[in-house]
Image 1 (cartoon, one colour):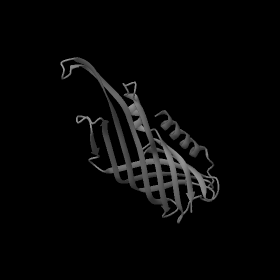
Image 2 (cartoon, rainbow, N blue to C red):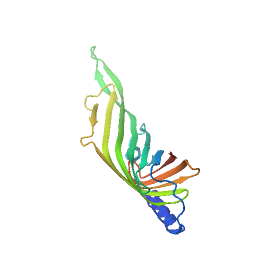
Image 3 (cartoon, rainbow, N blue to C red):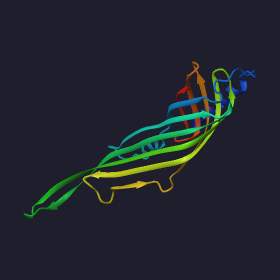
Image 4 (cartoon, rainbow, N blue to C red):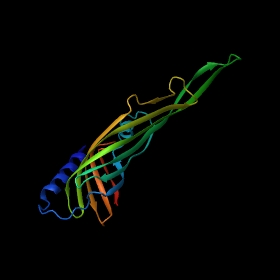
Length: 212
C-alpha cells in the first residue's frame, strides 16, 4: 500500500510542476496503442505466504500480467480492451502415523504421507475507456475505467486422493471492473513505457507500450 500511495503522489507532483505551455501531443485521434505489463502484488500468493503454518508449504504464482489495446476516438477519449491474468497456488505435505494390528495379530507401526495442491487462475476481459487529461511531446497522462467478464477457477487436489479435500470451484458472479490512473512516456515516436496505479488485478503495474 505504501508503494501505491507513493506512486500516486509522484504522478500528481509531476503533473503539477510540469510547464504550463503545452507542446504537440504524443497521442491523438486515430492512434492505436498496445501495452504489455506486469503488476504487483500477487495478492493470492501474498495471502498464502501470510497464513503459512506448515514447514513444507511452498507458494508459487505468476502475474498479474496485463495486456491492453486502445484506439483514440479523439485527442482526449480512447476506447479499447484490457485483458488480465494472474495465477497463484501452494503445495504441502501432511504425514500421519500410528500403530495397528495386522492379520496375524501383530502390532505394526504405519506412516502415511499425503501431498496437497491448491491452484487458482483468475482472468478478465474488459471493455476499457480512457480520458487523457494531459499530453505533450512524450508524456501521456490518463484516467481509465473498464468493465466486462471475470473468471476464476480454483482446484484443490491431493495424492493419494482425500475425498474430504479434493474439489473444483468457479466464481459465482463473472463480472469484473477496474479503474486506474496511468502514465505513458514515449522514448521514440512509437515506443515507450507505461505505468498504472489503481484497482485492476494489481495495485501497480508497469511495462512497454507501442503506438501506431
